[in-house]
Length: 329
Ligand SMILES: NC(=O)c1ccc[n+]([C@@H]2O[C@H](COP(=O)([O-])OP(=O)(O)OC[C@H]3O[C@@H](n4cnc5c(N)ncnc54)[C@H](OP(=O)(O)O)[C@@H]3O)[C@@H](O)[C@H]2O)c1
Image (cartoon, rainbow, N blue to C red):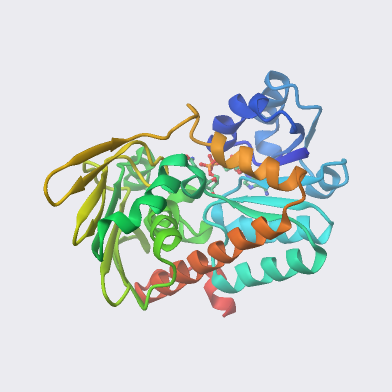
């Protein structure tokens, strides 16, 4: 796979140090803004990337076969669309797009052209998450699910000082639901599918949700998802059934070890984790999927991404968090 990366920010800097573990992947190009060109060149030197572009069309024409879109949220759709239209496979950072409508458009293009289109979200690919899925029946009837991903953000300090970075900017489709609660949606929708009802109660400052509570109603059980970037709490995911509970104390983006505690207090400690880097499992799967031409697996994952995108869009709009892309409904 000849991978081209668009963006040179935090997630790219986290991704590149582990790329040598992807044996069938060569990062051949990075595309950055003019203002970040020097930083892009530094990354290219450090990780032996042949080409640095500041022009996206030149980047697309440089021989990359797969584009990794690692840009602020509001740019995901346009860059992914142009990449697909020029015949490239696409890996898009979470959250996939701003609106469900945009997600449907990308999905249609990818399927028509038989291209890979994948949302890079760690959760679904982590061994402990897969194990939780396997163990769910042992909990009996699910009654309550709680996911609390509260992580005070340094970018919130800047936000309070009036320096609005993309992760808090409504113009960039930022906010706590898009940035952090999206992992909780992936976690829950991946286990239980489509909820019957979705409500979002955000804490709003300067037009953006700096934290909020999402409620997913599955009829016979209810889920609360807390996503906060303006305050901190011990992380906890509890999946509570009438026979026992799964308790996990790491974010839904990391899904580290967990406990299975039955009603008679029998406890099992589970840890299936097999990689040190949180992005490794997902990218190994993407590489295998693309190099093995497993479009079926890709489109199954894409269906899940579409569901999450739909839930996100409904939640946000019900909570009154609107972005420029929502005007094109
Ligand atoms: N940070 C994380 O831990 C994390 C984790 C998982 C997923 N993600 C996702 O990854 C995405 C990027 O997040 P981030 O934290 O890396 O953001 P970031 O640090 O703000 O980086 C964004 C990058 O995109 C570049 N960029 C903006 N417009 C561009 C354009 N037109 N062409 C090329 N490059 C452009 C920016 O360049 P300039 O600086 O010059 O504007 C910057 O290098 C987001 O969707 C986020 O949800 C982030």
